[in-house]
Image 1: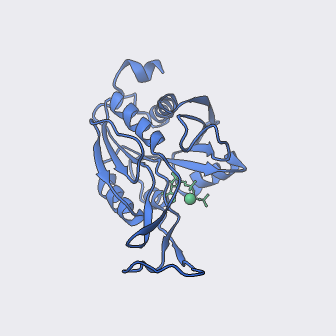
Image 2 (image 1 turned 120 degrees about the horizontal axis):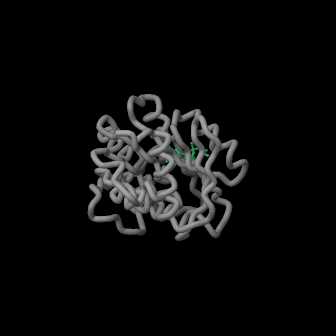
Image 3 (image 1 turned 30 degrees about the horizontal axis):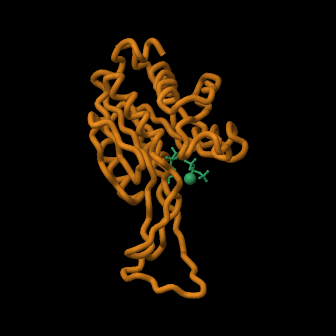
Length: 225
Ligand code: CTP
Ligand code: CA
C-alpha cells in the first residue's frame, strides 16, 4: 500500500470506471435492474483520483455519492453505458467494469403503461456484453472486470477473464451476505493473467480498491514511467 499511498503512479493516466446498476425499461413506469449499491465503483474512483489519475465514472443507478473530482457520465440502459464507454475507450489507460450490468433487456418496451393482469409474460433479450466487446477491441488499455459468482468462484471467474480478454478479474462471492452488494466491506480474489490470484481478506471497500489498484499498477507496469 505504501506505493499506492506514497506517490502518484497514475498521474497523466486516464482511468474509466463503470459503476452502479444499469436498468432497462419495461414501460413508462417500470423497469428491471440488478442489485448494486455502487459502493465498490465509488471506492475505486476515489482511489484512482488519489493515485493522480484523470478519472471518469460511467454511472448507472448509485446509492452513494462520487468524489467531486471525477467526471461523471450518467447512463440508464446497457446500450447507453456501452456507448459512453466506447466514447471514452480510445483515450483510456485503465478501464474497470465494476457496474452491475443487466444481462437482459425487455424485447419490446411498451410505449404506454401496461395495465395489470392476472398473468404477465415478459420477453427478454440478451444485452451486449460490454466488457467482452471492449476486450475484443483492446489496444493499449488495461482491462479489469468483476465476476459475481455464487459457486465455483475461481473457475468461473477465470473463464470470464479469458472469454472477455480481460487483464484482471476481481472475483466476488455474492452468495455471502456479509460482503459485497450493499455491504461496506468486501472480500475478493484478484485473478491475473500470468500470476497466482491475490486473495484480499475481508476489508472496507476502500482498502479493497487500493489492493486492486496495486495489482493493476504492478501487472500493467504503470509505475515504470
Ligand atoms: N459485463 C458487461 N456486460 C454485460 C454483462 C457483464 O460488461 N452485458 C461485465 C460486468 O460489469 C463484469 C463482468 O462483465 O465486469 C462479469 O459480469 P458477470 O455478471 O459476473 O458475468 P456475465 O458474463 O454476465 O455472466 P453471468 O452473469 O451469466 O455469470
Ligand atoms: Ca451477468
